[in-house]
Image (cartoon, rainbow, N blue to C red; front, side, top):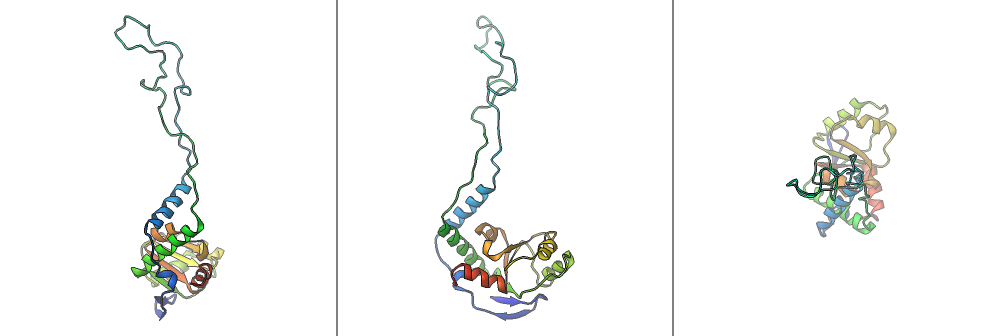
Length: 205
């Protein structure tokens, strides 16, 4: 793994930690991503049944001798503006996976990125002022194109504000990263302190 300076130069190299060379069932990553997306759903889609739609309760036409099928309400689902049968109702889609599965899925996702040489380390830096151009210069110098996930020890307010207008850049604490964030990014960038904090949280692997 390469260690970069904020100017984009290669500061040094390091062996990939054991946490980035994990093998296991790829299906765990799918489970974790599916769980994350399900937990983001609002679940507020709603339709009206025949008991809820507005409309008359009068029989549309007489029972016999019309040549039509027998009907008792214009709010029947087979009529235009009638109720909906088996439509979506507000519900909670969220569920939780065991902590061990979430952690294993995260390590598998990072291992896949590391195998594709998409995990790099950058030296610690500070954004003194919340200026987008300062962070944009670092991104350009290091050639972080595409979707980049920057994992730091503890993102400062200046770093958050300087990064939020840069398309494709997401900044997060290293200890709060999810498998979905890793899978959705083209490159994962750890700061040196962020990597240390992450490995410590993973048990020093």
